[in-house]
Amino acid sequence: MPIRRALFASLTVLALCATAIAQGRHPVSGRQIAGVMGHQGAAWLERPEREKEEAPSKAVAALNIKPGQTVADIGAGSGYYSVLLAGAVGPTGRVFATDIQPEMLALIKKKLDALPIPQIQLVLGTPTESRLADSSVDVALMVDVYHELSEPQVFLRSLKRALKPGGRLVLIEFRKEDRRVPIREEHKMTVSEARKELEAEGYKFQEVIDVLPWQHIIVFSPSGR
Image (cartoon, rainbow, N blue to C red; front, side):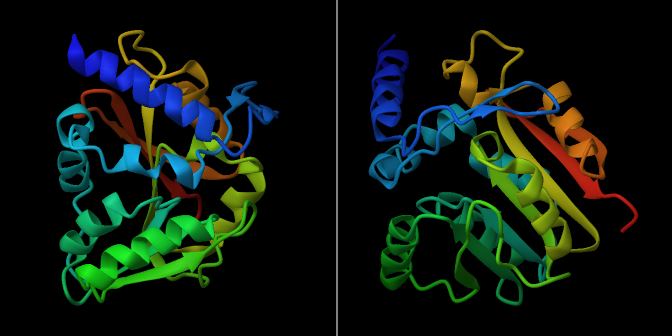
């Protein structure tokens, strides 16, 4: 089981690189809010095994993003998904790669300097604000990020303003229901937890797309938009 051992070793590094320990419990679901992964753990996001273990390419394909759309990669980290999303939106689209850590954005800038992708724009957010313009985003994607939001209710309100009418908020989260997924419990979510928390903020559940080895793709829309 060399892959599993290597993964657990990587997760130990991630735990050490977290910028905060668990933040408390969500007032709606009671879920333990996880600490934010620090920029020191960014190499884990770029690990060669990621495509095999998580199938990010399949995830992006499942979202059916159209050329010319605007997508926000919320908590973009090293920009792994941002690059894939840039391919999906094409040369006429736009990808906002957002993060609350300037060090993460610096890593993305370094990547873009080596491989220019003009449709990717960097945005420094905060724990409570996406800092995206109102009605500017077709799809907001959070890959293993939502469960780390220290103030999820406030941030969801900010994100709702940024979504266009008919826009989608997509969470990709490790499946807590599946004990075989080798990730710490506070870094997993059930569909039920996600629905309780987002529906409490006025989001409408659309669907679960279960095509990934370890993660749910959970799709919401801002209610009434």
